[in-house]
Image (cartoon, rainbow, N blue to C red; front, side, top):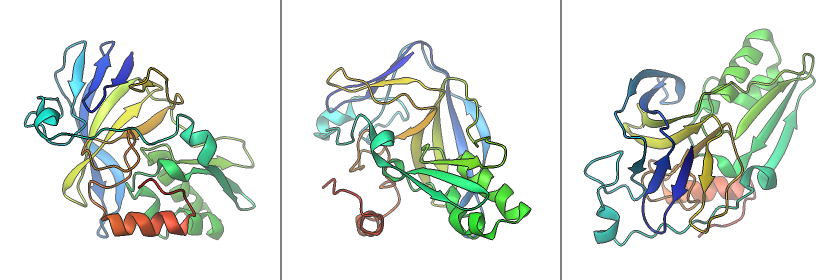
Length: 234
């Protein structure tokens, strides 16, 4: 099972990987709180997924990247999780935060936000913080209970999910689950991750990964990167 990134072209998916679509259901503030309406998408054992955002047959590639002169240059590090990992701790919890993987799916903003919930430290706040970390599709967030030693990481079967963002009324990223190999156009592999999100709109400055550019403005992306002192990808 593998996702092969082609030069300025689609993702080639091999190994009969199940393909689904699912909705990110949001609260009144447009922040996602859960996933619903999962549906199977019929696909062959090998299929190609659009990476430029221009296909008329989404999520599959129809060759539109050629006429669009799509620039699919990969800009992210092959060790993006390892190199961007930071931590935030309270007396009860530890948050592993690989900020460079952020796809701005906003699960961590529900309620008072994951860090504020951690600092509150009551049972209800801790439960919500754990749920938010577990739901983060990009794999940026992983929360550890310091008393039990347990993490919020879930066991996923290998599958690919095309996400729809109800709050922003737009297509979201491609959610890759279960540690599927992602191979660069140069033949090298990215870190094997239990969950990660790939760009499907063609606008990410962090290809092949989603950076939220399918809904968030470049100005807001720049503010986010400045806040967290992240390297420029322009």
